[in-house]
Length: 476
Ligand code: GLU
Image (cartoon, rainbow, N blue to C red; front, side):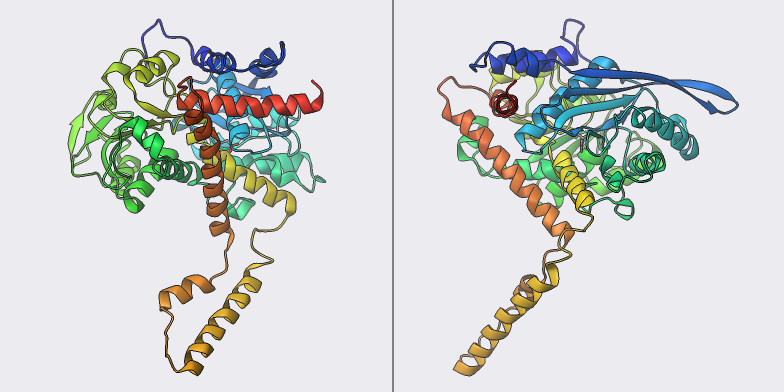
């Protein structure tokens, strides 16, 4: 964590918000209405574990209800506290607005170290926490829809969905009470890797933006870029995997809880992930050089830095040492307000969290819609699409034969063209489209104003304007 004179995470979010609203002309009162967190519910509940009652503290915070349901993950971590949950809920409001997911912002957290408990115990804890939230409508398909976050995944979401169904047996839309579920329990394909995929699509969008590349000092595209990733959890792993396997990036550094590893030739992302799951860390990983103080790698030489773990890891104490030209915030709030200022002065471009990690909530939105429509995307049109494509292929082949030219369609083309889009293809296409349009809306502000705003401020300006418009339309 950063030096003691840093503002808290929530203050950091407020500082960044204030910087943006100072450039806007919002009616008095509306600015305050948007900034404040509407409500935070704190619950303390007991679970009988290992022969005694253990008490847990959890939160669900609702930042803005300009649209409902409100949306945001539930994290399981010992670092969870009210301040953090409220900051994260605020970020959810802006994130959803920016990518046009029709939700208000919310976040939940439970003070627990999931590694301390076995699966059975975790199920009891999760169900009990869910029970407390469900009975107060703080989990509800129409009102408040959680999702995975740090320390939780599809397993926990399936328990929550089941708990809701048990308590609301006649709610036909019950399964939409939470997203990020396994596909066999109402989930959607592509959700697990959605945030990492979104980071990749965000970088594609950035490297298509000539003006943005110039601001970061890049002359060429993603291919060959040297990348350092902090945190090889769900988000960091998928982002690193896709960038190295599909875009020609070299993952030269990986930072984990127990240190960092570095290899200028590029690390094998899958291999490192496997190693971590077997050995609980990277310290004994056989390849590359090791750094016991992993945070030092945040300051190592690279082109792109991807903080994909905790908030506040780039702070006033290390920001000046960052060598990357581009930081993409795969985590929520990894750069403090103090560090943000130092990095801006250095000319480092930061692709802000509210955009960079919005892939998760975007695909959550698709899952929620799928659950409410009770049908898998593509189920009605896929075969029909394939039949129509087959008609075109048959016709082309007939024309070629009849005219005697003897053109042959390449088998690759045929296979690709004939296959109608299934759920995964549609999810990817929807995510890519969302990331491209949201980038466009930020970039228009980023490059279009004459006051030289940074990309984060541009993102806030777009998001706040959308929230404000929604409040105005309601007559508030
Ligand atoms: N926890 C994720 C986030 O911070 C996903 C939220 C969601 O899907 O609702 O964006």
